[in-house]
Amino acid sequence: MDTPHLHGTPLSHFTRKLRVLLAELGVPYEFVRLPGVLAPGAAAYGDNPLMRVPTLVHGPHTLIESDHIARYLVRVFDPADRLGVRSERVDDLNRLAVVNGIMNNEVVLILARRGGLADLDGVAYFRKLMAAIDQGLAWLEVRTDPDRVGFDYGDIAMVCLWQHLVHYASTPGLDRYPRVAARVDRLSGRASVASTTPAASLVEAAAAGWSPA
Image (cartoon, rainbow, N blue to C red; front, side, top):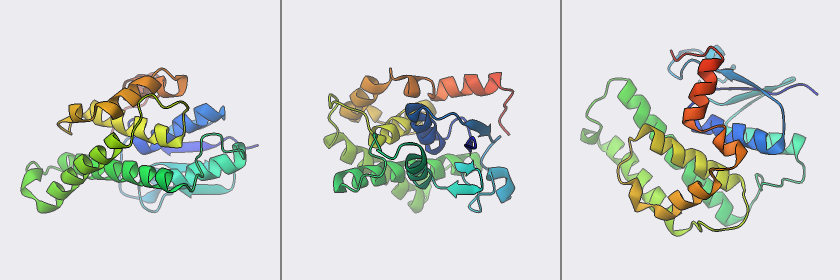
C-alpha cells in the first residue's frame, strides 16, 4: 500500500492531530514539512486550493481538512475506529467543534500579528475572536474530566490545542482552566503526544534540515 504523505508545518496543531493519530494507529507516513503558511499558491500546500495545512496525499487521493483526513485514515487503516474519530455522539461532535473553533481563531490572530497588525484589541472582529477563545475554553473546562479513563480523538484535538496555546503564549489567563490543563498533563506521557510537542517538532524539523520561511 502507498505510503501517506502528510503536508504541514511543524507547529501546526491541525497537522499535529493527524501526526498523533497516525502514531497511535502505527501507520508509517512521510511528513512533508512546509516552510510556512503565508506562501501564495496551492502548490505550496500539497495542492490544497484553500492554501492551508494539512493536506494528505495517499496514492491517487488528495484530501484536505484535518478531520476529513482523520476519517479517511481510520476508514483505510483502522476500520474498528478505536479512537472514536468517526463518533456521531452529540457530546463528541460539540467538543471537536469547540476545539477546532478555538484553533481557527488562534490561527487568524497569529497570522494577523505576523502580517503586521499590532493593535488587535482595537479591531472589533479580533476582539470577538479573542472572546470566543475564552468562552470556548470555559466550555471545555466544565466538560473535562481530568481523570477519565481512555484516550480518544477528542483528547488528541484538545492536547494539540492546549499545547499550541502554551507554546505561543498569546492567550492570557490559561490558569483559569485547570481541568483542561490537568487532562493534558495526564496524557502528555503518551509516546504519540510527547514526540509531537511543539518543542520536539522543532528539534526534529531542524535535524531534518527544515527552516521556516
